[in-house]
Image (cartoon, rainbow, N blue to C red; front, side):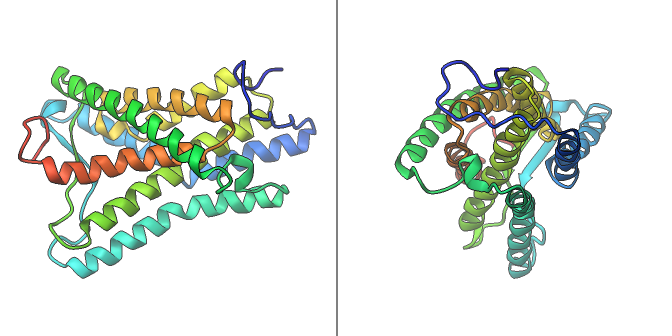
Length: 268
């Protein structure tokens, strides 16, 4: 049974055949995503329903990605931002623990420093491809009325705004690529799920927790998930995806702060 695309260079995980072990893997995956991005997808769906049932048109509403927790108290805001980053990475720690119990590790998912040059180069290339296409899709979807106005960052003008933006971008990259690309596709391969259905499951999950942005955010992230998931299935490494995702979010968060009020398609 093929679990990766043809022409892959990555090792294929052995399919688990013991019924008890298979059930445990299924429940493990459900539990991991119930306390992380799966539940985020449920919340995003509820928020999306709220958006489409609101009196205002979808493209007249604004969704904020990185916002302030205490705008008038910068030090408290900074503390809350750091706590948010730390709590966002907690599911990655859980995945590392679960892998270790099965005599695996994050290195099994290609999350390590063995190939820094190749990972960086691959990540930059992916970021350029996905970032450019994503921007075009966002503007098109917003113009067509299928997406909200996305305010990438509404952090106040304080000294820590850029460092927090970079940390938040890295958190997003690590969390999403370790869980949705690496961990999920690895576990599905161990369950014997063919590479294409596994890829679709991963991509739809990625799109689900971006539904709060509108249909454009959902479709764009499903497309990103298909590309990123295919790359993981081919290379067996999540690090290039972490690099790419981090760079895309840094450009979004920092670029938004620099361009808001200067270009017409960014909400103020």
